Length: 230
Image 1 (cartoon, rainbow, N blue to C red):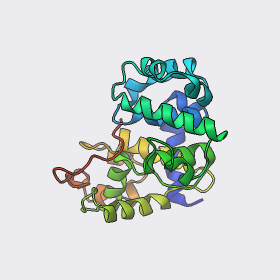
Image 2: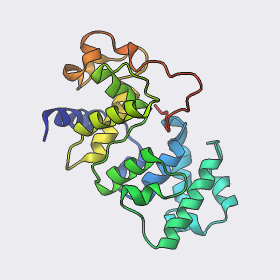
Image 3: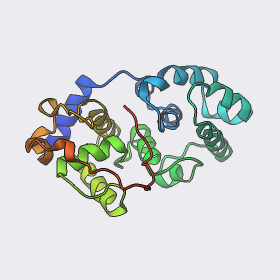
Image 4: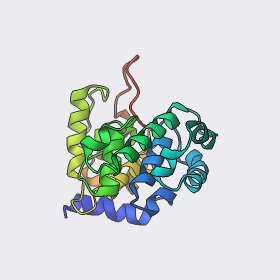
């Protein structure tokens, strides 16, 4: 294992926050959590997640339910279009008779973009695909001292390739979650706790004391990235 990936995982194993969807590799639970976490903070999702999966313990249960029931159990989370897309995805999976395990298969589901496909594939199925949400963008931009606009496809490609280096081949899902956790806890937008970061010795911005300069402010009018959570 690469020393950098090992340091990241060692930190994650000791510092990760307890979340119910982290107790399982069930792709259904992970998919529900990712839909709920879109544009929503982790603390807001904890109780609704538990309530939802108690009422709908399987993807087949979601698919069989009327969409009105799914929407009712989404209460408190807002952005109800996410619940509708989850219901559509569940019906697609149920009709196929299996949960897609590949990036392409997951990406074809309603409401599933590049980030969600990579998250579910890596965490549930061990696919070594890096995720790129707002937290990971911040971590990688600071590690590289990348001052390019993260809204540009070329910049996202560069950051994704850098994030792939930190993936452990045997635990890609945990590596992805570790980078997201790092961005949500230590590598915050303001006053990052650089000295406590397991990547500090490899972080160009952190070592130069310029972490808050990265990533640069998004250009006005550009679409927000998929997920913003803490």
